[in-house]
Image (tube, rainbow, N blue to C red):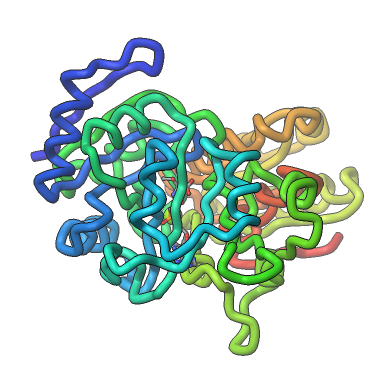
Length: 354
Ligand code: TXA
Ligand code: MG
């Protein structure tokens, strides 16, 4: 049976944290909030505990886990060396939504790294995550706390939906701060390469490391020749059960197209949804079959609101068994890059230029 405990960020219940820390030390699994998404944690140095994570998520065992630390001292035993460029990025962005890939030390089992000689490390900036890692006294391997292939959890109830009965404990700390997973940067290569975009944008990284590059598969569909460098990025991800297509181009033309196609499906009796933004809601008003579920991800002037609602929206479409989703494309500027990266994957690269 899964122990479910609520605790708030402003008033952390230390009994809950200590109990969770003990579970981790004993080789068990605890889901906990971070500033990006919820994580599903186990002792990063315990191969058997890591194996339980893969089982609980239904995750392919070649997809490595991120080790979470709560101070810089915890990094040294995990890695072979800390390149100067990593020090610069750590100074700029840790604690925070950035994961760095290092050459791993012998201490880190391959059961945690999906068989790789490298290890991903993140120092989260979330008081519950930090308190848990400190209470456990070990670094915590944690993927996002969703079933493999589902959208990452941004609310405690998402974790409960996916993990109740599968793990030892869930710490429900309410809504996460950002709603998109961390930016992953490989610092084992020179220049460093961004493998997954996030709230720490390419522009922000280039201010610290001007020659940083990006994995080309961030936007293009992976092929045999160009496989994503982060093994997890190759799987169909964040996917709602619905057939989801993104329409890109002039905003009025896009809305017209979506109205036409969504009405067609709804008139056939299909459960149909639309993904839009606050500024565009008016274009759909009074023009749609009443059964169509129209969801705004947020304010285009504040892309962080869009990031915050994205995974919840995809989950909510699943809850009502949506069969078709017609969605607008979003700007790819700054954090928009991470937003479109996740939406593109959720849509299975189904993007149509209008
Ligand atoms: O924000 C986040 O990063 C969240 C929270 C819980 O910290 N975690 C998260 O973990 O998103 P996960 O497992 O869902 O995604 C980790 C990604 C996967 O795409 C994985 O393939 C990649 O990181 N990764 C992990 N270790 C790697 C390594 N050694 N080399 C390349 N990619 C790696
Ligand atoms: Mg994940």
